[in-house]
Length: 114
Length: 110
Image (cartoon, rainbow over all chains, first blue to last red; front, side, top):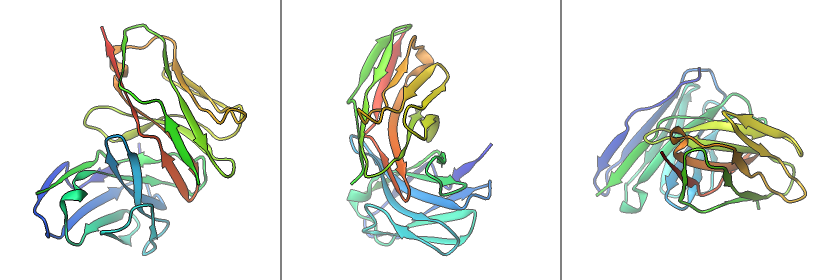
């Protein structure tokens, strides 16, 4: 089974702090994604990556950056956390870029910014 | 642009009731369609999918048919169980674009 893990289930940070969210997948998937999940809004794509050192902006990249130095690891960085970044963050991966490909999700990190 | 609209919840049903969660989409081309389920405290997992018009996806008693003429992908189950209580997301993929609906929370009572 594909396994996608995220470094923390719950995280509390203060405004202005730099925050790192880590995601690791163990099935050699090419593509990795970061979403945020907010009530009533569903999932919104922040960034995705099709290969090591490659990244593409999603719908809401402002205030975020990403890093993919190794194929299995995709990090989301909040350079200066703000209260409106309080949310559930979900990482996902897929093997190929075909449209029928299933996304495999991690358990999520619930981030609270005070 | 592409978008997904799904039935707002929450939905509360008694065990063994019939379930329908409506989902319609807007797309520029021919996307693949998905239903994902999120159980409490977990990430999303694929429930079923369909990759072309008239395809029917099915899993665990749930079904959905890709209807191009009505741009719909409604989720149905004939007899729900308490264990089906979760949040259900409709999604479309027309890569690199991936869109999710807002989610519908289902609660099934014994």
